[in-house]
Amino acid sequence: MSKSKNTATADLLGTVALVLVLLALAVGLFWWLAGKFEPVTLRWLAALSPFALVGAFSAGLAAGRLEVHGFLGGFDRALDGLSRAVDLRDHSKARSVAARPQPQTLSKIELLEAFLPARGGDIPLTYRAADNGRVIDL
Image (cartoon, rainbow, N blue to C red; front, top):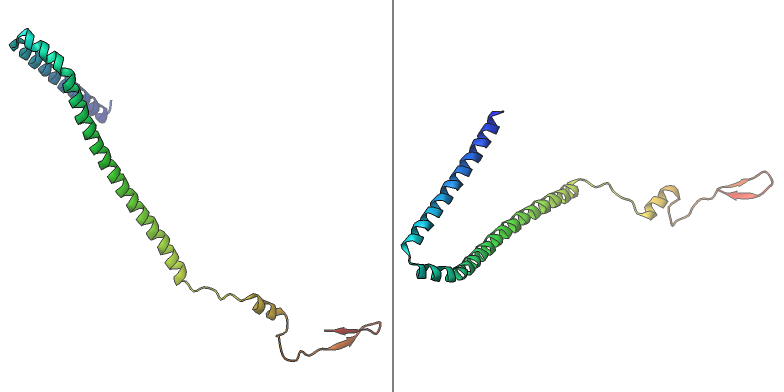
């Protein structure tokens, strides 16, 4: 057995022993208190205990709601931080793209003019004769 398993086993046994001691103390205290009261008082305590359980349930429910609100508040806070980090990343990408020199794009007309003669003005035409005597514009 490794050292960490020995430590985990010792921690578990210590926890079990502590729970058993606390349970024995609670039972002993209850036994001692039950011996101090008369049977009529114990009957009244038994009759009123469901109301105490309702109060304990209500207190647990309120504490649980408070804990859930705290948890969700922390969860929302973490998600807000995450969204800010993602926005920062996206905006930094956009800023870096904007900072780069963009290649100059040519319009469609400028692209056509690279292959065709310029518009306007006189366009010189060259006439050549083909084999069968027809004239072809070049």
